Image (cartoon, rainbow, N blue to C red):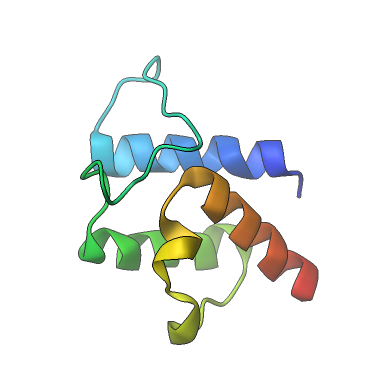
Length: 86
């Protein structure tokens, strides 16, 4: 799957699930999701469930690191890495 498609789907999911924003709201790919209060530890668990279902990847406990989840760009790269590995 292309990075632009993954990024777009992740933005939409995060905006709808955590920001409760309208469709015209934007979210930059480099916005730090934790520092800006968009996602917390519980949100990471929800996000992992979404990643596993949407992209058919398995996220190991050891992969639930801040650097994999801190921005949409990092999440996109993580999903692509997982898809390429399988």
